[in-house]
Structures are given as C-alpha cells and as structure tokens.
Length: 418
Image (cartoon, rainbow, N blue to C red):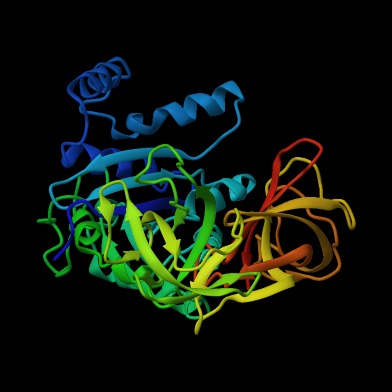
C-alpha cells in the first residue's frame, strides 16, 4: 500500500540529446500535470517554430534560455502530483562541467532516471552519471532506453544496452536497477503502456515511480536526533517549566520511555514526551520534525545529538570524506573552513587529499593535490571538536557534510563520509 502523501524525489541524467527534456515534458503532459495556460503557451511556441505537435522539450526550456544568456546553470526542480504519489523532479544539467550541479540535485533523490539512446548504447557520459548516482548512494536507478522508435522498437537493441550497462555497473554499489524501453517523443512506456513493444512485460515509467517502495530507504535502525534549538516558552502557567529540544529525526524511531544518551557530553536520560504541532505523540521517526523532553535536566544546545544509549554514532575529529568541490576558487593547502554536519557547526581543515577521481576515465589520480571546481576526491578532514557521524551509506544525513569559506561565506564543498 503506497501512501498517496508520500513524496518521491527523483533526478534525471543523460547525455546531450538523449531526450531528457522531452521525457520530463512527456511525463508532465501525459499525466496531465500541466496548467492550461502553460500548455497553451507551449502550443503557441511550438506552432511558431513550425512543429506539427507540441514540442515537449519546451517545458524545461527556461534552463536553456539561461544557458544562452550566460547565467549560472543550476538544478531546476519541477513538482507534480498523481492520485498515487507526490513527486519532485531534479532536472540536472548533463555536461561534465556541471558535475557539481548533478551532485547537488541528486543528493536527496530516492531514484535516478538515466537516459540511454538506444542507437548509441552506453557511452562515457552514461558511465559518469551512473558512477555519481552510485557515489551518492541513490537507492533506485531506472535506466530508460530511449528513442526505441528509431531502432524499430527492437528487443535486441534493448537487450544490447542492458548487457552493456550491467557489464560496467556490476562494480558499483547500486541496490536496485530497472530497465524500461521508451520513446519519450511518442510516449511509449512513459505514462501509458506501449503497443509497439508487446515483448516488454514490465510497467511503464510513471507506474514504476508510483509503486516504487521507498519507505525502507530511510534508516529505521540507528536512532539519530540532531538538536536544532531549545524551546522554553515561559509564556503561560501551563508551559512555564517546559524545556523541549526541537529538531528533525534523521534515523530510527524514538518513543517516550526510551533510554537515550546526549552526545558529545555522554549524559543519559529517558524520553519524557515527544510533541509536534498536533500535540503529544507515541513515537517519532524520520523525517518527522518534533520536540523531545527528557526526564532529567541536562545542558543541551544546538549541535548536540540525542541517540539511543545502546546504539551510538562514532564521535571523532578525524573523518574521511568523498568531497565534491563546488567553488570557482581552488582549495588552499591546510586552510581553515567551517564544517556543517546536521545542526553542528565547527572549524575544520583539509589535512590530506588522498586521491582525485578522473571523471573522464573514473580512475584515481594520486598526484594532483589541489581541488578545482567539479573535482570529486577522497580527503581527510580534521575538526576542532568531535562530530557524531555515521557512514553515508548508512545514513545520508548524519553521513554528509558541507564546507564553508569563512571569508566569503560561500559553500565550497559537499561531502559524503566513508
């Protein structure tokens, strides 16, 4: 049973002209997720350009206009809803020079749609995008083999792409890979089942997205509650002594009566109550935002983490991170940065660049020790105070960090703890 209020985030990736814009347009058009005035405007533009029907790629054309004007290319988010589920599409640019944008857009995704041209098969850009999806631990990958109409809807062409993809993806950590033959231009297997490919017995793309099981993507074992702020109303007699710790549950399940430890201090207590805007709750789990009160009066502030006493994260000042450099300016040797991990802000320094990943070949470069924009590398970071961390593959929130340049207040890098 799928919760119709459940939100699924997915990102799209593909080489230039693989039909990414057309696919998103087809998905929105056939699922009737476009407002009448938007549709009218697109139909008018399509007529002016001399197209017979609606040019579906125009639904994402704002990004192309930005590119022509020389404005920074960023991730475009599109929202749509079906009777079964809510969706956010992170439309990420496909070029190598926009690697950082794909990392940004894909970091919170439940699924990645990777487009492959049925005529060309798996190319370098496909491998690059699949590698980044694997690096970001996106739980579900849907390989859409597009332009099937240009290979006469050939099952052999479809199977050839599957063989190519499986050959190189066997080395990557992707839990769930699915393959769908589609024609984004004609609509085959996007929202409606194709009549041209009766040999394909699977579901079309939208049905796959609507029924994909994502509840287990959240870590429900390791209870993690980073404190964002302390609530002390002191406004009326009823709440005069209320002292709650507000934040978002980032893993596991908390219930009143649970024995918990506050990190990094190590003090223990029991949960007295869990509240949200509707009142007291019997339990809280990710990604709920709640306020927790404890039986004991403990000094707790922003950046501390409430965890189960028998299941603690690692508290350390030395972390190894897969880092994506986001800034125009290169990294500076042993420079001080601010590091943000959940609600915890500390000072940090990049101690060592272990290796950089060559995005062209996916090989490791151990010689180059400077990080430039779009570089992905494995680094060692030292912080001034301990962070309470999990590995990124265990928890995508407590396993991720960002680095901020103190002088400009710019986010210079984002990283996944390994």
